[in-house]
Structure formats: C-alpha cells, structure tokens
Length: 173
Image 1 (cartoon, one colour):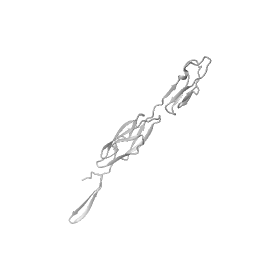
Image 2 (spheres, rainbow, N blue to C red):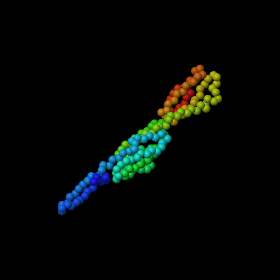
Image 3 (cartoon, one colour):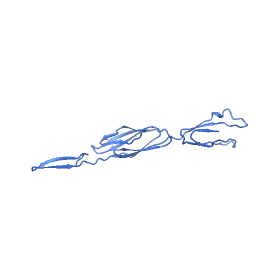
Image 4 (cartoon, rainbow, N blue to C red):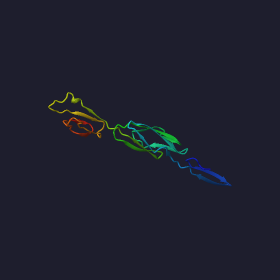
C-alpha cells in the first residue's frame, strides 16, 4: 500500500529463510497557503492564513519584521492557521515584506498615513494695519515629505506668501 507518512518505512522480512529489506519512501511534504498576499491599513490590524500540508508534515512561519507579530499558529504539523498582527505605520511611506510559511512566500503590504497639513493663523489677529506689514503663519505637516502651497484666493492680489510652497513643517510670511 502507499506510505501516507512523510517518513520512510523499512521492513525486514524473511521468506524461505532468506532475509531482505524493503524500503518505501515517505510522501513529499508540500505546503500551500490560502493566499500568498495580504494588506493592512496604516492603523494596523490582524490577518489570517490557512496552511494546508499532508498529515505529519510540519511548517514554520519565518522572516517577519518587527512590525509584524505572529500571534498564533507560527508552526505546526498538518493543516493549520497562522494568525498575525500588523503594528500601526507611523509614517506616510507604505511598507512591504515577504515572509515565508513552510517555505511558501506571503507578501504583506501596509499603507502609509495620509499627509496632513495644519496651519496656525493666530498671528493674523489683530488685523494688519492699512499701511501693510507681515505676519508669519505656522505650517505643520505630519511628515517631512508632505508638500503644501500657499496663495491668495480672491481679494485683488494685495497679498503675497513667501515661500509659496514647501515640504514638511515651516512658516509662511
């Protein structure tokens, strides 16, 4: 009969006074995953991958970076489930990694934060005198790669902003 195990079987038999050994190889241990990719929002989250492998065959999840934690099922024998947790991404840059479960790749990606720009225009009070003048408006970005522009909307062109654009945090006069 077929050997359903991943281990070889040796049988020593004697027939008519003659001893011989029969060697039967075990099955090949193969692993398949329910998916080979996953994604997470910038806020992080959890994911699950089902693992299918013949009975007696083992698997281990390897290669995860510090922002991914295996919460359960990181290794097992036979079919199983690997649960993982993705930590929040505190930058605007997306990130990606390929980890392996039983030698099969699992490509995980995570979105970056959306750029956020806030201004502090409290310096505009009291109003600028009719003779003119300048005031600084503080611009705060959640990442140095986030860009912004400053300009006048309506009003006849009497206002200028320097600098008119920039990356990250700064001030406009």
